[in-house]
Length: 288
Length: 286
Image 1 (cartoon, one colour):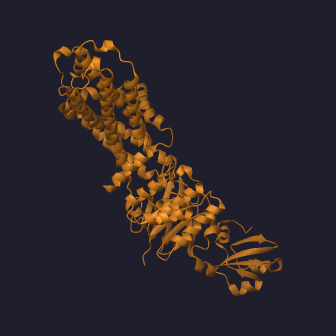
Image 2 (image 1 turned 180 degrees about the vertical axis):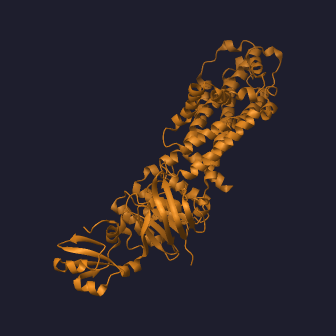
Image 3 (image 1 turned 90 degrees about the vertical axis):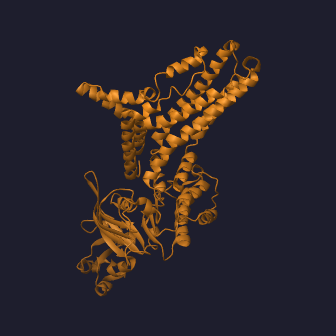
């Protein structure tokens, strides 16, 4: 177990962007809330103010989530590739660490460490911004931005999203690790070209769209599997018609639907197979 | 005593190209073995197989492990430096020591720090700030601080200047080598390691062409400097190689009749480099 602690530490030494990017976003958002102009018209009514607060927290969360997705994509593609490119893999492989442990440590960083870090950063940014704005515009806002109830709901959504996206996107994660462990150059290109080629070849030679459908469903089908259809309603309630009472986040999460969907588990199995393939490739590719 | 490394019928193909062709060899404990061969002879492939970095066919046991399947276990008792300056640019000297200390049960950080202090390298510097020679010294210090039963060095000084190369081997000889160490080394600079070696393995075109201890070489091979008038008589003794040298010709013999050769010219033991050239130069004597 101790070896895993060192391997994760190693990832943080190597990839300082893991924490620099979210920290930088926190700083930028705090600066924006410190020096940005506050439009008084947003706060005409108490309801409006309250819904603005909810929207702001959601927007913060979405921003961090988007940044995290892009970074994680890059991290996964890079993590088994750079040390082959600079040949330092010959040093890492001289240590008593199995290739399985190496790949799993990177998987852990991508699926657990990075999401939790961005989650903490999103929390920090929202709290700081809420505090700063409340102090700056106390006459307009009062303590309207302090909404523990919204807060708790957002925490739950974040944790739920971290757990469910990790499972749902496991085949994507596995594929990126395979490309990272296998490719000799141009990892970005290799991550995209084979699926595209598959889709085109199927369309040209067979005339069907099964690959496009499967890949499309995986990339776009997360929300409809993990959330129930009231999801949009919930966002509307925050922004549009707050009169209908405090909306509940619990209703929009659909853990049973997610866990009982065959698609979830078929995807997870494919993901595990791809991760196992990445370990085998890692064993065989000592160099670029 | 059983061998530390035992290879039987070791084969490796890359597509249709045969890198190792049914290679058999043994490395005994306490020996310093030079694996010597021209480019593309299969040296690196053989070492990669020994280190578990590549798959292979045939039988291979290293410290009782099957290297490819059990690389992690093997690496807790063996260590290697394959190629020069492969420590990653972002790694600081301190972190490198911390990390290896964290994952390696036989690593002594204090020893690594002492070796680095000797070389004048301080801990907070990152590899990108160090010269190629210094990086190599850091790697050597990390490796020497591991109490390994087997050390494998694959071209450890390639591309280094003469000062760095000398520093590397001085550190290896003075601070590392003792009776309990076993070292397997490949290098192009045969002259530099010649007097360290206890054994040599010559490899060519994926086959072992000579497997001998240095003591045996002195008995088994002879070089004779012959002047023109004795050349015909000397050639009758069936040299396996000859080359011109300052108006004389040097003839190389395996299992020589030393008494008869002594009458023909000055007899000496060929250097490893000369023997290598003699053994690996094919066709008619030059």
